[in-house]
Amino acid sequence: MARSTLFNRQQALDDAMALFWQKGFYATSMKDLEKTLDMRPGSIYATFGSKEGLFQEALARYAELGAGELEKSLAAGGDPLHGLAEHVRRLGCLGDAGLPSCACMLVKSLLELGEGEAASRALAEHCLADIEARFAAAFAEAKALGPLTDDAEPALLASRLQVAIMGLRSYAQRRHDPKLLKTLAEDLAAQIEGMRVAAA
Picture 1 (cartoon, one colour):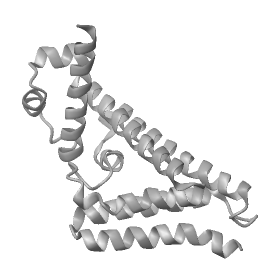
Picture 2 (cartoon, one colour):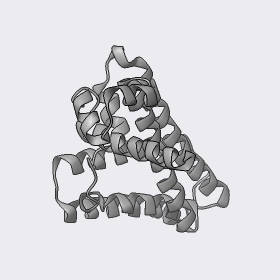
Picture 3 (cartoon, rainbow, N blue to C red):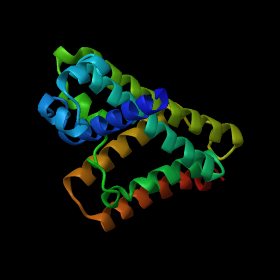
């Protein structure tokens, strides 16, 4: 019974994440949540505490899934630069993935939330900072292995990569052109892999 309860809660959280990702915090009403989660208001509050509490768990879940995808790309790439490039290439398929939104849920939340949701905004900022730190660690590893020049700054390269990915995903949200998106992602991936050539 306990396993069934845990599974149902996780499914409800994933469903809420998809809804918030698509509509945003403000536009998602309790009625929307009741319908999507197939839960009564009292059950939602008992399980997640509040709408914002549920939203924060959804943000954390989104960040967890994103970090997992990044780690898969890094592991499959063979070395840090190829891993980061592979991560970017996968973003080129956003338009084909049937996601609630092509734009990053963390970025959307950061732009939407006001002072009244300071805790949720801080969580989104923390999650984005964590992703950037993972990028920086990958670039630092690449530098230690030798592909990057001695004057390369992993933190700056990580910031540039996060800016590029934010832009790519925002562009994908505005313009649904799968072929163009794949081309842009491939160009960015090639730039990352080209750092090795430049350092040779």
